Amino acid sequence: MIGTSNRKRVRLSVESQQAISGYLFLLPWLVGLAVFVFYPLGYSLYMSFHKIRFTGTGMKFEWKGFENYTYAFLSDNTFVAALLSILKNSVLVIPIIVVFSLFVAVLLNLKFKGRMAFRGIFFLPVIFSTGQVLTEIFNQKAGSLDLLNNYDVAGFLAANLPKLWADPILAVLNMFVVILWYSGVQILLYLAGLQTISTNVYEASMIDGATPWEIFWKITLPALTPFILLNVIYTIVDMFTLPLLNPVLSMITANMTNPNLGYGYSAAQGWIYFVMVFLILLLVLAAARKTVYNGAER
Amino acid sequence: MRHWMNRARTLLLGDMEGMGVIALLLLYLLLVDVALMYLNPFLYMLSTMFKTTADLLDPTVKWIPTSMEWANLKLAWDGLQFPKALKSSLTISLASAGGQIVVCSLAGYSFARLKFPGRNLLFGLLVFSFLIPPQTLIIPLYVLYRKLDLLGSPMAIITPALLGHGLRGALFVIIFRQFFSTLPKELEDAALIDGAGPFRVYWKVMVPLAKPAVLVVFLFSFVWHWNETFITGLVLNGSDLPLSVSLSHLDKVLRGMYGGDGTEPSFDLNETIRMAASFLIIMPPLIVYLIAQRWFVEGVERTGLVE
Image (cartoon, rainbow over all chains, first blue to last red; front, side, top):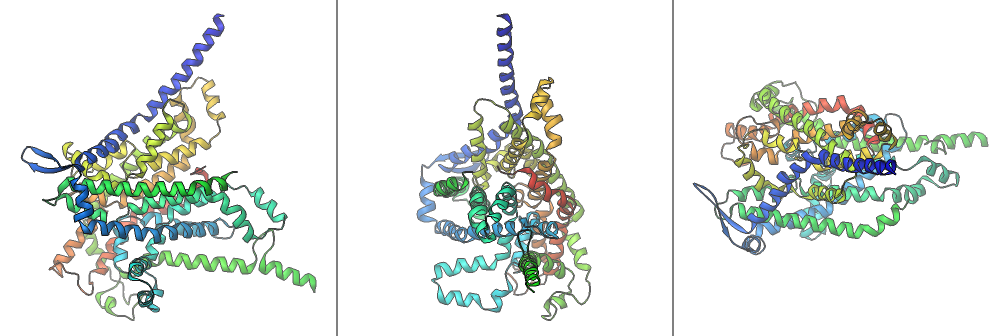
């Protein structure tokens, strides 16, 4: 009697001990989450409904309701145009990155001499793929393909496509190499994914007489669908926070110092942007749910 | 004859064991091609930084300069205030990477191995925080840093990283969580039966095993902090500029020296200096990468980044 009740108490305390240490391990991160994510998130929402003025004593908030938001859509034509151009660029860029990195990862996963050296080169973009240096190189046109100048692709596109699409396609082609440079992390994720497919499956299907082509479409690709989805999400997040393709970033910081619009309007722009990105992600998840689930059932 | 034909076929087209010569050649051709495309901007940078103005204007000089012009590097070195900026960059990147490794691995371990109420909800918040664009948070953070008197100090970048946030903190927690959840459960059970507490298990058993994950996170965090310009440029407006920001600063100095009126000149004579500056900026992370590269490439496969 005494023994069992004793044991029960010990077990309970182990569980609650684990829970307590669970929270303790998380504590610094949770503090950071509150201070550096949720506080600014709430504060920027609050700001977005105000006009903010600076006085000698500090910031003065003046309630404006949805005025900042209606201004963004109805009066500020540069903002809507910037959003649309990012959307158009992303529609072109994201599939390129997701497909290209899959292609490279499959090649790098084959067994051949010197693949470690090639992997070293293909991960190199992870080093450069952010920041000023890349913008610098891109500005010097070193990021475009020689092919474009040699065959006057610009003229061809302008002649054969409506301007609405010719311009973004050209913009994307002009920084094609830079786009490829943004696939470093995605290649890593695919390679990690390819490791999860057991070699037994490959051997069995080869004995059954399947060609490498069939194996890729019937085995490799279905097994990779969760990673494709992951890469699509990562690429969306990455692309929408990337200064290179993104006029909204500079617009927000520029509007901070604008005396007529100020912090309130910048905050509203930030929120519109966030909601847009979030909706796109939800859309992708909803669309992917069926295909990925069926393919991934292993 | 037939036997010979079969052998030739195997050699060229491959068999179940491996690839044939044709497939292998195609593979190398493809890889070399793509690799050159990748390296093109880098090679362009290397070649341009050694060019003289005459070489730059001469269309017959494409890749190899007629003479090595070291003055560009010297000018860039001075223009960037290299030693000072390097120190600032190293402080920010190393402190942030260190902080993120410690706090994110603790959080990742907790999410992977410890059971507590609200774990799924908190993990949901983690993923959510990854999706918020920095554009949305930048203004309140700017105000917050001003209140805390952090504006202009590298601590404005380092503090969030020390609490496991900052640049892509959420991603690093996810990487550590994935890594820890692939390790066998028996490891912990054995240590727990021996009477070790959760923190001892984490420190003595888990951390030594987590080297590949630590390396991956360190490299990403170091490089991303090194190259970050958007937030850094906003909160560090003055002295102690890190390298990433001092490049655009150099730009202004150069434009003042030549051009002057702020309009883009039709041909950029400072390109050589700017390429030299770019080279100086990416050199340190490149060295770190070259050292870590071998373990990194292997480490990625073992992190089981996603399961």
